[in-house]
Image (tube, rainbow, N blue to C red; front, side):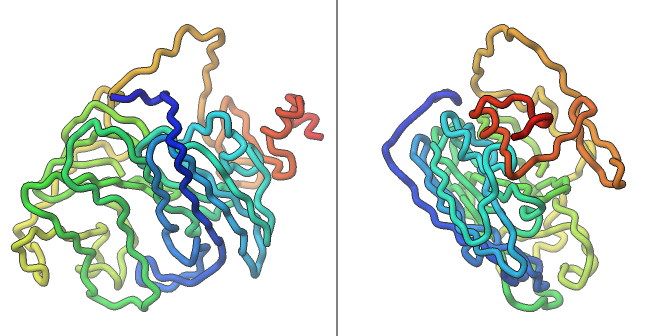
Length: 332
């Protein structure tokens, strides 16, 4: 199987054009003002083959009020294109209101991820979308469900039912699961089915079997759930001869969740399918990640008891390129 660090160049360019603006949608049945990409939530999927070049032109049409914005492509290496990473105050300045910026980068490594805004809290307000880079398989399957999402502009209807998916008996399906929550722990399971996990994001791993994947999404109960006041996000899978107008009812038994409430699967389960030799480092640095309540009574993350506040007018990469490594003491 091809190695994770291998560089490829297919010569193919995949072009995308994004217009970011405010709009009103109803992702859970209730209308909400959000930030949308090309009028969509989630944003349109980006797809490429390993080694392609991806080119995304981002147009900032956010108004009333205006805001800057950026787009970050989660987990990409951006080797030799670090300035395309889309992190405000680190790799670039925000895209100014009314402005546009084209990001060009290699589709590497391969796997499933998502892109999202890296400016203020825009990601929490709708600015994200799925991203797939196709590459070699380390597990055989018949059907790739690819990207599936639902959004509506209609009003909420009580007892409207749940999302439905049609499967074919005897076929193996690949599900690409994205937790797009800001501070939400999610678990995913299918009644009566085991699942094989063979990749974590861009990292192919040695396949292992489980009945619950870390990524059932607990939501606030309310009128739009069925049955009423049901805190578990539900969907229904139907096979080819099933009555799609009926509910699985008592024939569908939920998986017993014995996993810890706030821990990922054990590292002994998630073993990389291939290994990259690191060699002996010249320097080893221990970093303690923690959080604290700052002077303004807000939660703030720290590394080795130190926080970071970006200067959008002086991105760190630009300063470093200019030979200034004294930030934040001399950011000019």
